[in-house]
Amino acid sequence: MKANQLNNGNLPELPEHIIVDILAKVPSEVLYNTFRFVCKAWYRLISSSEFTHENAVHQKPGLLIQVPRRHCDIEGTWWKTTLLQIDENEFDFTLTNFSTHSMKLIRSSCSGLVLGKTEEGTSMLCVKNILTGSVLTLPSCPSGCKHLNPDCGLALGFNPGTKEYKVVHVYADSYGFELFTIGSDHKWRRIPGPFEDLNERPFDVERFRWSDPESIGGQVLHWFVESDTYIISMDLRDEKFRRTNLPDVGRSVMKYEYDLVEMNGELCFVYKLSGFQIDLWVLKDFDRQVWSKEHSIIAMSINYTPSGASSGLTKKDKDQSHGGKQKKVDDASVYRKEKKAKLPNFLKLEALATLRNGEVIVLMDKQNSIHANIMYLYDLKHEEMRQFRIKMKKGTSFQPHRSGLVWSKEHSIIAMSTNYTPFRASSGPTKKVKDHSDGGEEKKVDDASLSRKEKKTKLPNFLKLAAVATLRNGEHEMRQFRIKMTQGTKFIPHRSSLSRRLRTDQMELSAELETSDI
Image (cartoon, rainbow, N blue to C red; front, side, top):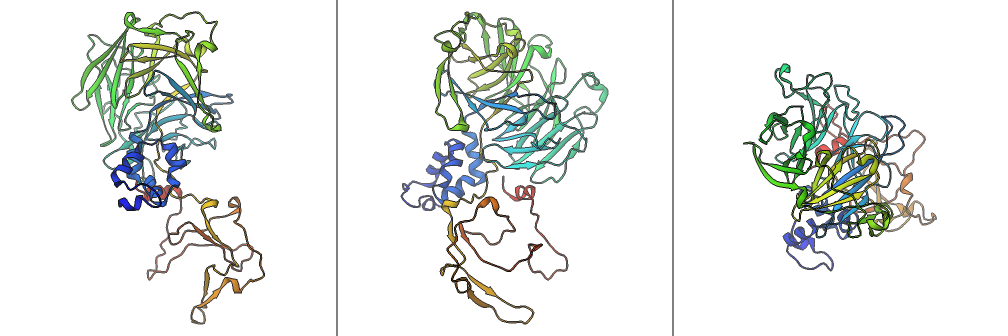
């Protein structure tokens, strides 16, 4: 795209790469809801796959907190979803309603896309972009799994080499792992599990359940398998499994002593050495399995602020669904009667995620937070820990997430921007009539000459329209015409061909996504 194409109207004359660089840093919500309507050039740029991937890198990461609503049954559970984000400059956080309505449980997130079950109450999976509303429903898994958490493991990942998104599912490693590549697969593929000899499995087959893996940039997945020396990893580029040794901490470690989180694009091993110290090990080289101890959180050196302290963390509440402005509320005004809290026992903490380029780690008390609604933020750079409260229930789920424009809608037909010509207007389209049976020549008939007495027509109610087919690319122009029809009239897309074999285009959402460059 040339620079002058990006500068239609009164836009400043800037080189193309500068405009692209500026827009890539704009929040996805602003780009999708506002900037893409500035001009056609910006619309095409913001909708391009190259730009959406560039924009995703600059989006502010957050942590999705999903709290189950009224529980009818496992299949029918809905979740209230909130997005936790850390301020870039201050040690503050925002809590934003992630959706205007309840959602199903999100099992994985990658570049703005989320993976979960369909909202129709079936056991089928779907991949969805909450921002753009684009949804792809996946075929049923051959294993017949109903995808009930925590009975299976699910992940959504991305292969940067082929620029393809992949869904990974495991119910039982004896059956194998199931993979679905969006854009090239029409059905699930089954690949062997990580253990060639099933007797080598370090877990009890009757008790062990594969969980959702820890995803590193959507490219490498890591599973805990009840081993005190290694975890199972999978690189989505070659779809091969390997054993990744845990860091050498001087002794064998059990699962309750550590957590796995992503830290600035690398795997972080959060080792709870004691009730007063946590060590953070980072996998610096995945291929050579090189670990490095990057940080130590030591209780006696922490500047701790409980949620009830007047100098505590301020909370910004914003209801995005109602367009409300952010409002800072000091925690002290909410919990003035609360007694000053002590530092938590580090052995009872669970690391959930890291935010702000790995500078802040989010933790919760595994035993008490569900009832006390307590979580913690720790600033690694300033050695500061702060406590805050959020309403939670049993089963509350946490998922790292960042917004994105992947799978943005290719076109939006908006009434106010449509150039509309009704049926009777003299400037309307001409209609070519040709009687093939008589071999007659085409005859142009102006629509206005057919119905001069008809009143001027307004734009139709879009809710009452039925899409029949797509033909020749248009330029946001709508024209009305008339044709004689009776009840039961059918419409079939067709193109002439010398071949006897009828060739039809797939007209399903999955086919549209497969042919798009994502």
